[in-house]
Image (cartoon, rainbow, N blue to C red; front, side, top):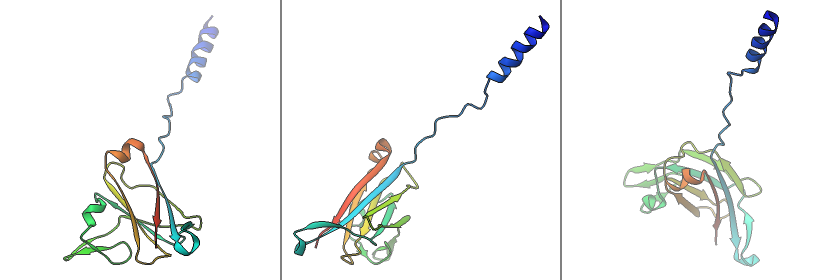
Length: 144
């Protein structure tokens, strides 16, 4: 009987797993698709390969409306400079994927066109929208 109880206690301990794994939480993702159009081709869309992507936190596109765009994502106005917190480049298929540093702040995405140097496309999201949906999937098109 003692052996049976010992065996039962031994099996009970083996069956207990104190290392309960919590389900993995998916990372938030920003998927950016950048294209340009060309009048000479009937406004067809083409991947804007090589375009630069800049991410700004706590900034809306209206916040930079009076600023001049310099280079490498820098916006300047009366001695005030706004710099991007994250950078990327559009790949040959017209895509870039970033993992946001913050998911609870407003965010502005700026794409500087490679095909049309100096042309920008922007999109902004509030701190309420972004965490609620978890991901941003945006297509920005630069027109001639």
